[in-house]
Length: 353
Image 1: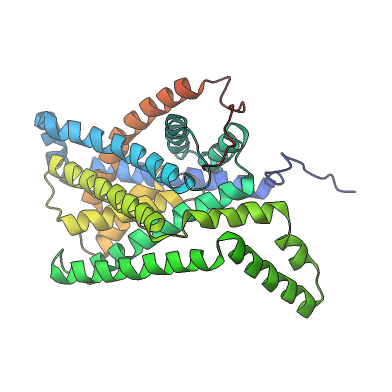
Image 2 (image 1 turned 180 degrees about the vertical axis):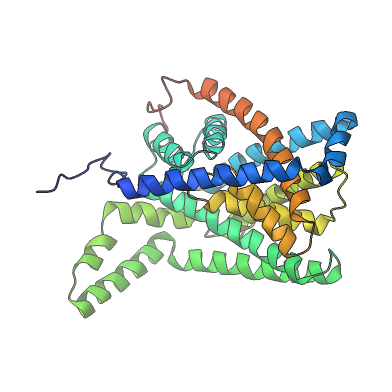
């Protein structure tokens, strides 16, 4: 018999050797891409821009670090606003967890996501299925916010009336669709509707699994997550927070471009910031190198700025961001406590009234 690999029963089986090898390979590729970005940043054509950093105004340097800190804070607020309708978590503890997770996102194996799951499950007593729904709600709101802006930036020649109209129309469509979809299936009536469909599917296919799944405890926890998106106010809040986050990220690109004396328009900053962020989110082997190279490739493809200058931008942002993220992660560890990080917190499992 083949030995069965076991992990924590709620987190699934351990990854296979092939998956681990692919993660390591992806991380090494990311490091190689980062090395390419650094070589481009230090190339002769960028030396003049880099030399200007020595005499850069302190306000711009401070702005670069400040925007990186605000991005971490904004992500934490986004997660807090999403979970609040169904669970009441400590705001500062959640921010601390978020800061540590963002720093871990540099590494492969999705340690960032795993850390969030373990802390919120064990410390805050949030069911794993509800955590999955929580992450899903945050991701859907992110797509609803960023998708229309990326499309508008790609189709328009600048942030003009056409860009604004296209972006607003897209935001209205994605936000309304998200709200109506959640409202249709949320609450007791929505759960009854889903179970009725599952029962009908079981009878049609003669497979009782669908009916059993719909009545399982994890399904109820997963369904509870729809309460994060079932009102216009809740969806609007999450989309608005994501737009604010994107504005901060675009401002960071704008500040970095000014430090390097690169002529980047605001629409270009929005496009690069969106690309930079999305690649970092979806990269399975850590965001180091992949974000910077990906944003540089998109910049060159769309003729926003040449790849060398875009790589220099990415390296400058990474260098300043890493300092901020390390500092905030350290503060997060102090807040949670190295020994108390995975210890259940009293009253953590009480849902809001």
